[in-house]
Length: 402
Image (cartoon, rainbow, N blue to C red; front, side, top):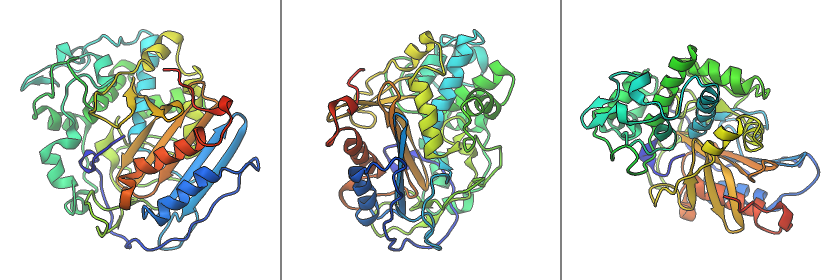
């Protein structure tokens, strides 16, 4: 989940420029209207200038799905519930879940050092991997520099250069090395800073501890048991989104309402290993987060670890706190729990009540927001307020339990 343009290192494919797209909405699965959420989706297209927007609400046993705009600016195709998209940093929630499952099996410990699992990888230039723990990776208190902000990568992946480097292949080790040549943000445990490098390291530790690839661990431990048929981590060098999907559009992190828009659907997601490379749907994300929030994915001890949140002290998204791969967000009526993600061309959020019974998963297929919206996060926050706080019974409001 990102707050600035420079925090996503992605790839782009030149396509058509943004044009006006009519709003459209899907019918409610249970016949119940969600006019507030639908209104925000419509405004995301008409005011924020996004190509398309979707939201899927799961409330108890009922489901509602709504859309506005289009999945494809060339054909005008509507967004469908089964359409897959890149989920960015929500990948971190899946990785943290796997790490905590391995900890429950005593195959690793959250107190293990990075040096223990990855000898010599995080060392020198102010770093001492023996002082950085797995827990500090997962809650972003390690101090390890974020490779997504590394000048040497930004020179190739921000703005027009991205069009020349969109299919470049980067290994997890290269990502970590690009971070470590930049000194640490602070001593381990002495501060908080969001860093994709933390989860690249966590993914590498999973592979060492489990003896299988990160993609295999996510598939076997999460996707298959929960029947998430549209959720996967792409294989190395896989540029496509497999299965039904629309197009993803990007301004290449360039600001201004008149910035050119490019089709970035096909790209090499290797830069996002462990931190932002996965693909899913709104339905699958609601299923995963319901299971996670209900406590069906982790034993009680690891569940408590995951949902012990820290205050980023103004260094992240306003009104949020961060646990181990999950976040809490304070709304006007209480607190919701989940995670969000951003990658060029696709921004998404999945948040819900602490008991997992009421969830909203949403995505926009563009990475900008015109006018007063600020960013797609403004759209998502408005959706959450509309669903959980406006004109709903007290019993359906967001839980203030933190």
